[in-house]
Length: 103
Image (cartoon, rainbow, N blue to C red; front, side, top):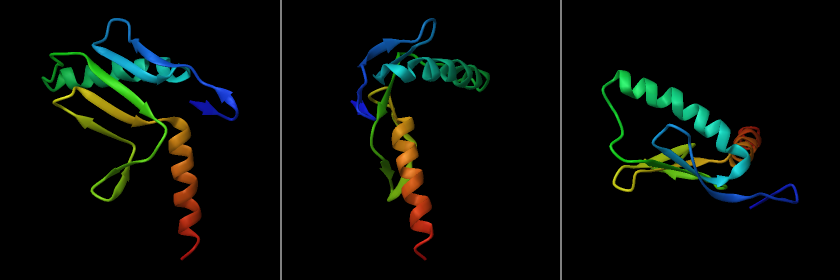
């Protein structure tokens, strides 16, 4: 993965003490792991506790669900959560903002 001409390291890293592993640009692993702590705590309050590790995959493209742009999507059978990377979100936001001015 490259961002601004800089080669980004991509690998799979576990989040310490959480049933979560992150695949993608290593520069964003700490943010995703920190967010997983809060998300898993809230889900536990609702009685939802993961039975298997969840893989969070950061993707450098838009995610389309039912014809609409989504920041992420969860595949339960695969225990996989795809999230748009910060760069992909910025690009999608810029495109959406500029498209709004066309009308």
